[in-house]
Image 1 (cartoon, rainbow, N blue to C red):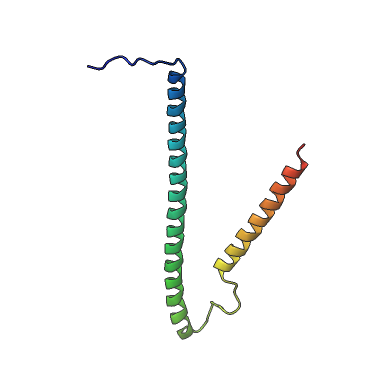
Image 2: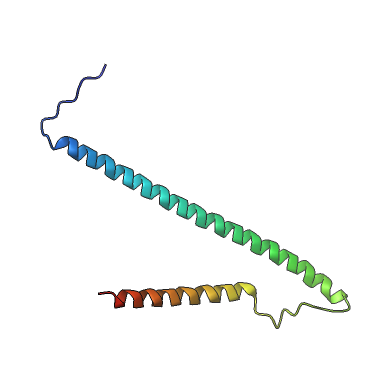
Length: 108
């Protein structure tokens, strides 16, 4: 059997409610951060696996192709797709930062 809680100060229940609410918010933020990092890590692992699989496929293609009468792959003339993706990503980040900076500067 529990005894009723006797509080000496009427502010104590409000402080308790505030502390519980803050603990709930911290837990929610931690859950959101964990979800974000789990998503990022899963995406990076999938991308790394995709890159390894793609590299293995192209090794096989490049090994077989010289034996064929016509070679369709020209690795020396092509810009690797991963470099292109990295270049596009950096430019997108730079442009979005510049756009955000202009948007902040124009607000009163």
